[in-house]
Length: 78
Image (tube, rainbow, N blue to C red; front, side, top):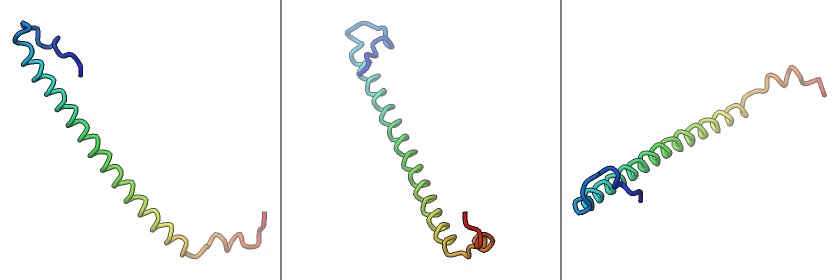
């Protein structure tokens, strides 16, 4: 834990309570920042999975389509 005494330049006897409050506030901020990061990551994953599912559906549809380009290049062999 970072030493936050520099934020409260008051006598040592009164500083303990204030430092504890500042430390708990810092922990709370870090906690909510972590929650925000995890929520953002979860949303990203959901978008990624939805897009992957859509791409799989499009691929399955394209594989069932007629290969028009194959008709034009049917006689050519490289």
